[in-house]
Image 1: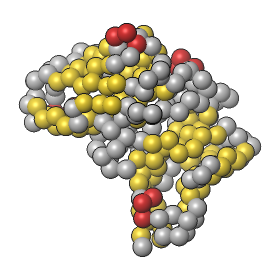
Image 2: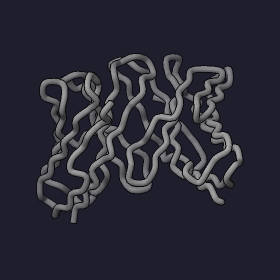
Image 3: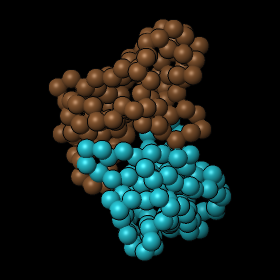
Image 4: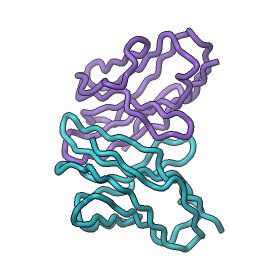
Length: 111
Length: 115
């Protein structure tokens, strides 16, 4: 099972773009890369998922290089409400769809 | 669409007592997960069900933890007897199927405090 490594914490200011990088050197061919966001006292919430190249949705972009050994979550123009823990996960689907959460990255957005 | 429901939201018990948590997944979701999240750590998968069958329970402490998913819908997670180190948030999640890279939807969790 692929293991992920990401920074423990990051600081930013409102209106800035934030990029959180995750390394997953042992990612398998069938694995997808998924990012979740977690606020205090809540369960994690899906942000974005990708397999390769670039994926963009209404809240974030996910950049995945050709070797897929890392990925970068990009949050455009963050606000105070984006302060949360962000988890990078890799895993495949099917009956054995197993996602392993690391310790995540605590993003603190300041005014 | 209703989300994943969990109850109770909070529970305080003394060590060696028993406790049970309940989860109602999103309607139609075949896969159900129970996670344990200790303060300051990421969620750790305890058990995964596909319909009413267990897919993975390799990290479930089976001497004290048990889980069931009768009729492939609701699920209960039980701890008997509880230990101090079981203090954590217990999260339930569900996903639609085993489609590659399928999204998991999480409930609000049950915060357990063992005294």
